[in-house]
Image 1 (cartoon, rainbow, N blue to C red):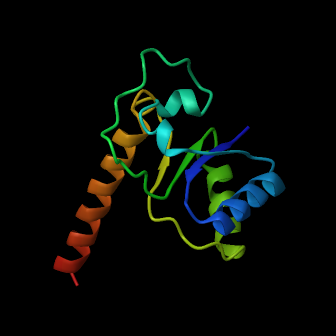
Image 2: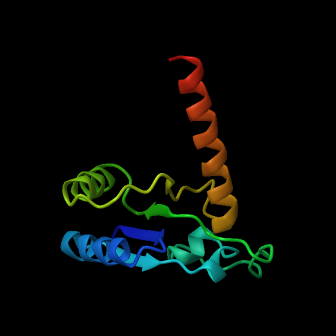
Length: 128
């Protein structure tokens, strides 16, 4: 079953994402700031936590993020189309759990997504 892990402080958006996942028969899990040090694979139910959670710096704030598991391909496309159709406010950081990143902490994945996003925005500015 496809799973959507996500974090948002916006309670309305949170409820909309849970409703959308229910309608699509996807599992949904809202991530807490305290889970930022846990591995993506463990949170998605793909693996046991091999080691203790990574220590997250005091005051770290998990940004809005959507992480898909077991839903790459068509299921992911269906989710994203339904998300837009439901007019849910966009979340900029999105990822798919892969064998490469499943052992990463949520924080490490988010930091990589932020770097990639910044690089894309810079590229667009230079080529506009």
